[in-house]
Amino acid sequence: MNPNVSVSQQDIAEILEIVCKDNEGAFNALIACQSWLEALRVVRSLSNASYHIEETLRPALISSSTLLIEQCEEQLSQFGRMTERLTLVRKQKAEMKLLGIL
Image (cartoon, rainbow, N blue to C red):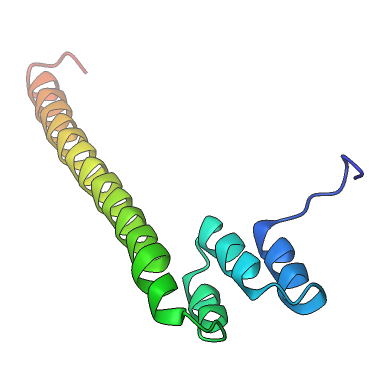
């Protein structure tokens, strides 16, 4: 394989599904790249779709959503700290202007 060529998981999934007719492999590649709607589309073509949905898709979705929620909570916490700091700095700046320091 040429190291200068980048192949995404979605490209791999497309090759597996269309060229190789490996829908299960395509489904797993789509799960790996978190392409949920495409994974759901492909899993419907599998004979044991409900098994794959319950055992692979659902846990991956839960894991991904949990991680996103944790990241959002961390960003919200950081935003709160930065907002408090900005308020403090603005207050100090106003006080310094009143004292003639700035």
